[in-house]
Length: 173
Image 1 (spheres, rainbow, N blue to C red):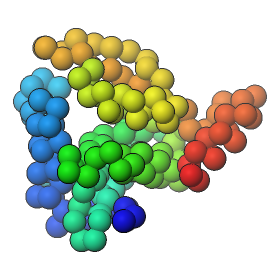
Image 2: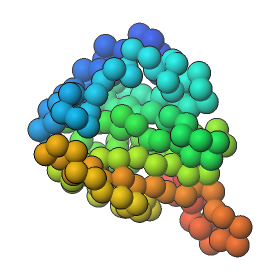
Image 3: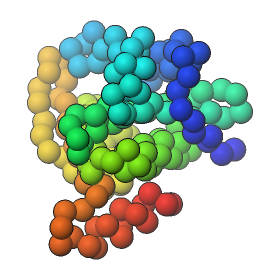
Image 4: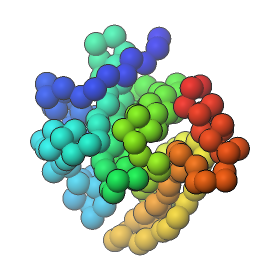
């Protein structure tokens, strides 16, 4: 079954908040651990949509099984936030599908680069970002967790034609 990706609607709020909490619990994390919080969920319109970003959900049939947001950092950079796939639907490529959709949407919105973070104990997320051309830019100890920060250039700098083609191909696949 193919994942259908659409824009967030206010009626999705309870579903995506539950998806967020289930996904964190699956890797031993919880809101309030110093890294993960969930106070942005009631403010998706304000923090993601109204300021030039976006928030997408992935559905199988009528069930939301994946999500991810784009939050502007500056005029060239958006943060990929809340990339989650329900544990019952992982290992089917839905995380990769959602990440590609977010990267494509970032380009459509005029961003040249995306950034994001995850923790060392989220091996699947780290592997996903690495497979899709993200590079680690920093690590920071936050309580008992090591937070890994990464980024990916979506629109190449002048003189970097080869990466344009690779980025465009990646967004189409």
